[in-house]
Amino acid sequence: MLGILGTGEVLCIGDHGMWTGNDFYLLREPFSLSVDEVSPDPKTCWNLAPPGF
Image (cartoon, rainbow, N blue to C red; front, side, top):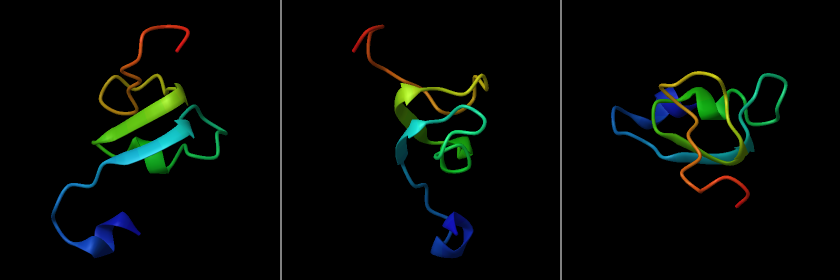
């Protein structure tokens, strides 16, 4: 659905970016942050908090 919004970037935030996680597809986008599990893809799904937060 993000493709129908136009060409602007969208920041996606979720909690389960790993495969089988409920936010896996959402957090595959280029600008995505996770508040918990991240995906192994180094280009997306970052968690900027220190470990344990």
